[in-house]
Image (tube, rainbow over all chains, first blue to last red; front, side, top):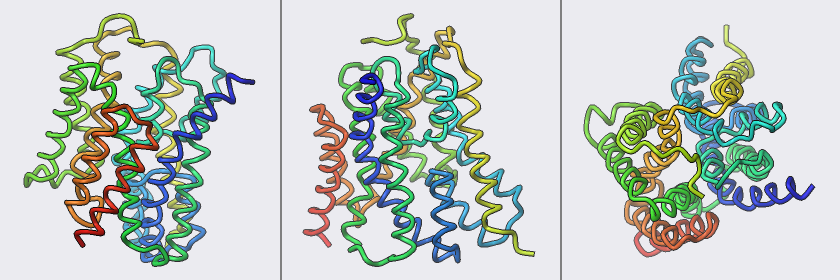
Length: 238
Length: 102
């Protein structure tokens, strides 16, 4: 029992900053959904079943314009293709002995944040750690959507905008400590940020959608790094 | 005829779930290829860095509070503070910076 409860509790704890960040982002999603003429319940169902930010924001415009379902499918595929890469990466962190149904449940939770925190755990990943993260993050995401749709302007704007950085703070807390230990990782983090800055500010590049930018840069930089600095046989340094 | 919103939601949820689920269930073995393994190992570091910067700078009321949040998070993360501590420090830095600036 302990081997389940322990990782679950850790997951729940690490899920709090995710939930806070989600609350802020989904709050603004709720406001926008309402503005796009989508009902509170519909918005909540969308958040609960999709659990993705960029895809849901894009969906609002598609629903509003009454575009064909195929367009919705294609848009979601492109924006969320990065999850495919993340799932490949995550598959390498799972134990071969783990009952198979866990993979179906864990798949639901492959978001940027949950993936980022899960994959950087040392050693084999317990599904219960991910479930802990989910138990904090999913209510945060869904509840935030409802609150945003119902009470758009109840929270002071200043507080909301400050909450927006919670997720980024967490990402930095994930990537920086290992980058301290490894020059290759430090270089990768710096190059990634610099390239991302270029892509978001230089004309032409900045027209590339953020979902696609993430895929493109991830493939290029992680691919280049793997070519230049292939890692030695042992799969975990610890 | 207007398509039901729930039909849209169903389509998007299905596509998003499949994208997440297929690699996780199809790749059951440990990948042996060193290049591929290294690539997958590096993926999260690139993805998270790309998503964080420069987005964090424009996530708040002004670029200054975004920069304050970024600086606070980098410093605390460097000293290996927990995810929650780093996040809260970033939010607090942004909030305080906005109080003074806006």
